[in-house]
Every structure is written in structure tokens, then in C-alpha cells.
Image (cartoon, rainbow, N blue to C red):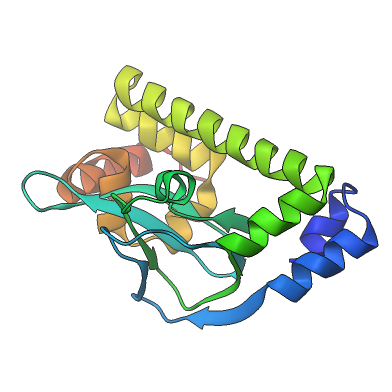
Length: 193
């Protein structure tokens, strides 16, 4: 976390040290839920190593994956974090995941003590909004094939680390449909002689 934040060339050394003192290191085992739907989110995670996902249950009690987060990123149940109301989502480790956890009261203290932390968390919120807007647009505008191709082009790491059932859910299709799309794309690749 320290190196990632330092590389931003945004914070003073004292601000970085204050954040590191507030953070506690944890390992979240693969499959463990960190935040359950209905709980109020009281912390923010920085993913040092591993992969997390956010999901919710639709009206037919099926899991719908809508967000992934990889290494060197901050992650939380954002609407619950902001409103301090029960979370509509679950946050789960897809792999054994090493994280630094900063409690909400510590984040608020960092922001109170530093304009740099205020700016940083504002840019994080803006980035989350832009990502959400882009995701909604691609889900509404593009075919499943195009959504998969876009993901393959922009985030090949998703395809290497994420179980197919989560990936299909994220793309808004069935696992069977995803398998057909992948097969069709594999058949279109030119063979090398």
C-alpha cells in the first residue's frame, strides 16, 4: 500500500506514515465473505495481492457479480460506506487475498487532517462513478459477444483468474452462452503454420 500511494507523488511522508499506522494487514481466505449484504460497511480494503468480487442476489435468488477488484486497488461496499446503511452487496475473496484494512473512522480522520487525503478519496469516488457509468453503458449498448471481446481486450487478467460462472454473471449471460462465445472466438483465430 505504501509503495502504491507513494508512487502517486501526492502525499507527504508524514501523510503516508499516518495511513500505514491506521492500516492493519489481513489475509482473507478464498471464498470468504468480507462484507455481507445487510451489514453496514465500516472499512475500506487495499488489495495487496489477490482478487475480490462484489455480488448481490437478484429476485430469483441468483448471484449476480457486478464488480471485480485486483491488486493495488482500494475496494469497499461504497454505497453502504457513504450512507452508513446496510449494504445491498456482498464482498468476497475469489483467491486467498492479502489486504490492508482501514477503518472508516480512520479514513475520516485522515481526510480531516489533510487536504491531500480529501483530494485522493474524491478522485477514488470519481473513478468509481466513471467505471460504473461505463459498465452500465456497455451492458445496455453492446451484445454479449462485444462485451466479452471488450473485456478480453481491456482486462485479460479477468479471464485468467476469474471462475467462468462469475465471469458469465459479470457479463450478464449464462455460463453456457459464455462457452459458445469463447468457442466462436477461438474458431475465428487464424492458425499459425
